[in-house]
Length: 342
Image 1 (cartoon, rainbow, N blue to C red):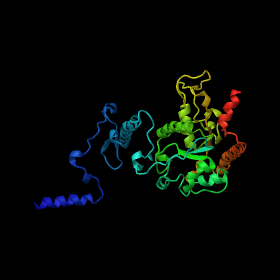
Image 2: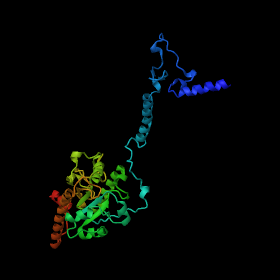
Image 3: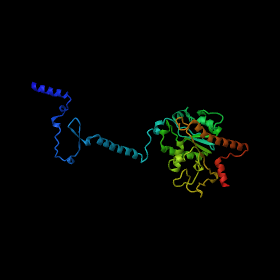
Image 4: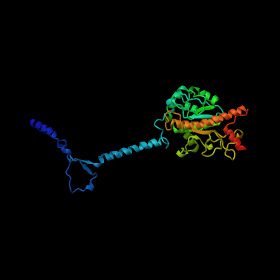
């Protein structure tokens, strides 16, 4: 018994010498390779380590494990794409309506025949909390209204928004009514759906100009109208072509946009109320006034808004002159229709 213990101690000591032979069990020792064996008959080619005679099949190397990981990702990716009916999944920042359901939507401030109605994206947290449009201190909306001449006498506070329709012939609404932290928490689908609701508002209230405050709003309107996204070369700030007017009643065509009831005259317009036919509100695409929008400088934003301010000021003067003469106030859309009938 004593001799066996000494032998075992000698084996343990031999392991400290650095030799790997002490770690290899006699049962796991590699067999000698017979030179007569054909390499092609072996199921796996083997790799031999520099300090050991043990052999490791290539099938257990990291290359196979990597391939297995790639295969495992494929079903997950397909599931994400198929879960939304083949459409692109919502952005990671999307927030469902229940997230901010405790915040009330902002009411519209619109009356008939305004000079201009401004369309924002949707209320932010501070705007919805205070109940005033563009209420965040970093928002440039009220500053740009003043510098462009839309409110020429002074810069208004957000709480004075209720004076805009009667005093300045300006109104406010949003393409999406629910509040979120920022625009990235909205889906593209609800923005496009909001464009249809927006057109119905323009048809009801008949402003001369509808100002879309931000590129993303115009992209949603364009997609609903044309059935596709707007191309880079098609986008521009400022007034758009007359064919893009909003609220105009037209004959409903296949794949059409903003259509009325089926039928109508040969010109394609709905003649059910021809005496009150309206040519639609001119579309003006303005820059976003959000403090987060930094793609344009302040001077560039002011220049774009100045074009709208100049047009509105000119129409104010024409309306004042018409009132002084006792004439009925006529919108630009009405005058264009009258000229086309002559």
